[in-house]
Each structure stands twice: as C-alpha cells, then as structure tokens.
Image (cartoon, rainbow, N blue to C red; front, top):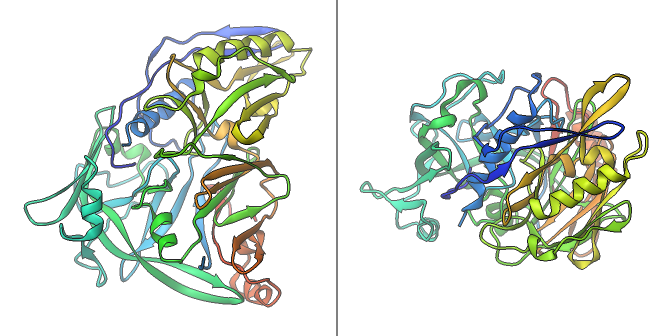
Length: 478
C-alpha cells in the first residue's frame, strides 16, 4: 500500500437488516483490523468485510497524448460475500518475472516482494504462486540512488529516505502494526501493446517500483498473501503517472465492475466513452480521489443533513475507492439515511437513493447498490444495509457496493471523476484525445491473438491501456 503513516478509523460496526419492516442486528463497536484479501470462493461474514475495509482505510487516511493498448489479466469478484478483491499480473525484469499484485486506487506505489525479504510469505492460500524479485538476476534492474531526482522528490515524504549505502529506501508503517520496508528499483514493465492498427508484442517501459525486503504484521499471513500492491493513485511514483508523463499512456483511467454472477469487468488506462456519463470535479490538492458530496435523497426527497458533515479535511470528506468492499457513511448522514429507507419500504420494494455531488452530478443507487441480501426470515427476504456507520467527523467512502455496475472514469488530466450506470458484462468504447476523438471497442481485447490480428484492420486508431477484469476461476469474460 502507499508510503504513508496511517491510523484506523474508529467506526460503529452495527448492521441494519431489513425484511418487510426494519430489523436491526448489532455488533460490538471496535477498531477495524486489517484483512488484505480473502479467497474468492469462501463465504465471509459481514464483520470480516468491515475489518478488511477498516484497516485499509486506516492505511489510506494519513497519506500525506500517446500510447497503446495493453491487456493485463486480472482476477477478482465484486460480490461482497465472496470478497472479490481485484488482482492483476505484471511482468517485471529481464528476463521477465510474473507477479500477482492487488489493484489499489487508494495508494500510489507499485511494490513487490524481494527475494531477500525477511518474514515474508512463501506460499499463498489464494491459490496463486508467489514470486520474488531478484535484482541480481535481472539484466535491466537498477537500484535508485540517493542522487536520483525521483528519490530527491520522494524524500519530501516521511516514508522515504537515503540509506547509508546511498540507496533510496522506504518504510511504510500501517495503523494495525503491520508494515513493509525496502528499496526503490527501476526495471522494465512488460506488456503487449496495440498502437493504431498494429500489435506490438512484448513491449516494455522502464518504471520505478518498490522492492520489499521486510514485512510485518498481517502482511506476513500466508492465507491471504499476494506478491505486492499495484497503486493507481495520483502521486508521481504511481505507474499511471510515470507512464503518462512519458506519453506512453493517457492521464486517465476507467473501470466497470460487474456486480452479479462471477463478477469481473474492465479496467482501462484510457477514457471509457458512454453518452450518459456525468462528471463531478475532484476536490483540489488531495492525495486521494475526493469528491464534494452535497446531499442525499431517498425516493426523491432530500434528507435533512448538514452538507458540512461531508466537507473535505485531513480526516473528513468523501472518497471514491474501488479497493473498499462495502461503503461507509458518516453518522450524521447514516442515521437519517437508514431511517428514511426503513420508513419508505413497501412490501419488498425498496426506494431509490441518490447521491448528489458538486457540478450537478447525481449518482442513482438501485437497492442492490446500498443493500446486501442476508437470506430469509420465514418467506421474506432479509436485506442488510451495506453502508456502515463512521463516527462524526470521519470519512465517507464509496466502495465496490456503490461502484459496481457503473462505468467510472478517473480523468486526472481534467481533475474530475465521471460515472454512468452500465452493464459491465458488455463491451465498452475507450477514447483518448488526439487530433480528434478516436476509439476502440475494449471488448475485443479478450479475443485470441489470431482473431485479434484480424480485427486490427477494422479498428479505428486508438491510444489506451486496457486491463480486463476476470473472475478467479474463469477465462476473460469479454
């Protein structure tokens, strides 16, 4: 996760269950503890989901045009009871070594485990083979020295410093007591690229990433281990920032997370085109994807909530985070929200909910985007409110519960985020700005190499990077 010092958010972890009328089930309040991942085939309790989200939030809170098409295989599911975190495979070094890394829009750095790492997992309960980066066996690897401009920039943060061996090193400390430290390396990141109408296999670009030599706490647990973290934040050390600064990719990325069935979806470095997308400006000068949430409506009626409870501060505001499983609402908004939903329930019909943001952008939530089915009480379906209560002054977080079944566009070039309801099992068009708008159908990327070559002659020129989200047990869905 990111090179920052963080603390866990204290939240009330009561859940609200709804059948034909409001039914409440309470859990004891606690500090949320870190869970990095769960096997996608295992059922997980709601308390465990909150625990994983909570420490993730604790990690995050204190964080102080040209290109081509790239298809990264990604595993994961958005079902909160299967706990579908999203992973991708990246190839680093010469010869390339493949690493399974967790996709994380709430952090900046790509880091993987070094072969010299102490107390690092050697096996994973997720059914993946763990690999270790070895700088001595990669002919293109280079340690980042203290005189390197990127190190000088990173030293401005409290997590990076210069070692006695003149290496640029980092130490990330997390609120649950876990942490990782290591050194920065520059080496080749490999991918297959489509530029215009040409397929360029085995393309590569040098990037700076972290090589972890020490891990502690929950990061050492073998049952939930991956090879590292792939940060998609806005910082200059993030891969998207490094690639876009050299015109290898555009400074925009998008995702569409499939919410039912086996999950899956699409994640692209590029702008997904959809006429119904609405945009809201990012709050300026924030390290995360902060939006200005102004009001909440239930069944078309604006709730009586002071907009000041959503104001952005060092430990407040509203964040869009695709790495969070549930959704979190500050208590001054949570209480009237749950009350309004409970009052307006008619038989098995639940009211629509609208989140209203700056710029006139509204996010309409269907019941399955703020509720989770828990089972049956007699013949009646039992639903749990998926939003969790955060203490006064805390951060409202829009996780996968809310983000699923929507296109989301993170337009860093114009500092805005857009969204639209969408069937994420279907193809999307992706565009970047060149002399004119040009696009390609991202659904074509999952085809075989031979059929892909045949389609290239029919494609309009396009410049974007695509990461196709797959379920852990199936082939690409698009």
